Length: 257
Image 1 (tube, rainbow, N blue to C red):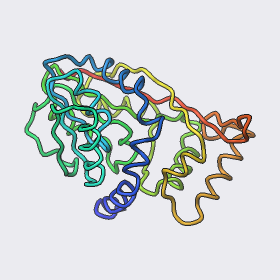
Image 2: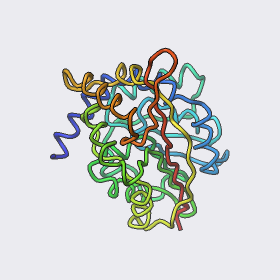
Image 3: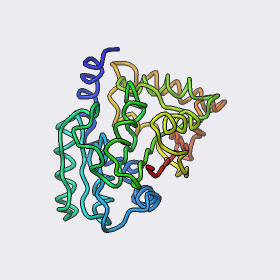
Image 4: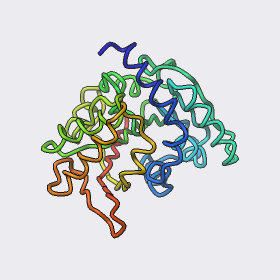
């Protein structure tokens, strides 16, 4: 797929997802946001860039701790949501920029912490994006990537499901591939921690915009996963008959030399 065609998919999906994504409990989970900020080692003198910042949740979380936080995103609707959210939270030490991530429109060594959360699985060339993140990070600063990292044996099925749910999805990388990207970008082997993302199928579908009819396909995929966890999401049916799922999210952080 060409980069221009993929950008069109991103704009279509995330213009429609701006509010549902921003308000999903699993995405706005304060404990998860705090874990990322704490794991980065952020302090009051830091300046942060969040790449593909979406509705600005992680930018605002960092802004409560650091000197200044910047978010860049391709989708104007996401940035509108980010501005609204920051204002609601009373956070003013933030900057928002509309733009693509290849290349990042900042000079070398512009930030002390550079992050990206739930975006790498949307990039056609995640390695190139990580190289750009390392470039704009100051020596001694920290690069952080947060994303789903399916087990190698379930990654193919997980990715097939995600493409049905969100046609702008490219590929969620197993943890070893994430680690390899850091090495290829000239970064040391990252420290790794995890947190658990929990969700419910109908809520997930309500904030997704698959192709017409694919919501039924998603229900079938998840129902099938109840019999055997081929997706790596530990699907189960609760007392109300709803299908719930949960899987670990990887948080990788490396200090630039």
